[in-house]
Image 1 (cartoon, rainbow, N blue to C red):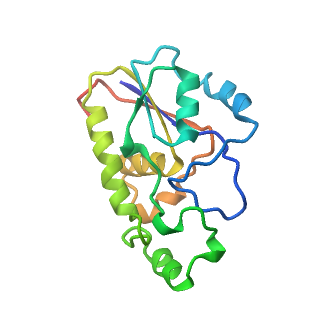
Image 2: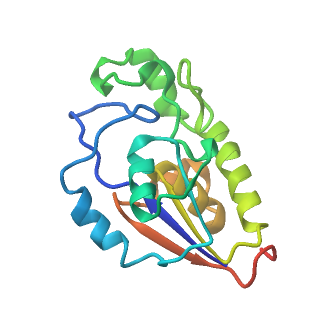
Length: 179
């Protein structure tokens, strides 16, 4: 089984914007970034999964108009902080989250631990499937959590795993369902 984890292309953001699940536009570099991505993925995958975020579905659609949206592939839910900037978040709340972002729940959102359970539920089902070539279009956080799981990296060190915009992480397993 070959699995290609693809991070969405570069979003168009204002500095410091908190945008986990918030829909944001893409930079004008989308087509050139896509040209690079398509050289790193199979031409005829068995299935393409995508986060429901527009920045992912635009890319999934460009790869192939037929794809499956899976809500478990969404980025961290920043709840009440979505659309704010880091410098406008209540300092006490921010400190609580920064001190324990793995377990602390963002007001109205989710913790990294909760996100990990969601993402690994998707991953567990995927690796037990009979697909041979799979593309997963998603977010940096989702890819980091999968890689942290595979590499046995603790969640509090998951941000040490760098995943750039438009990056493709190719994974191969001996045969479907045996991992």
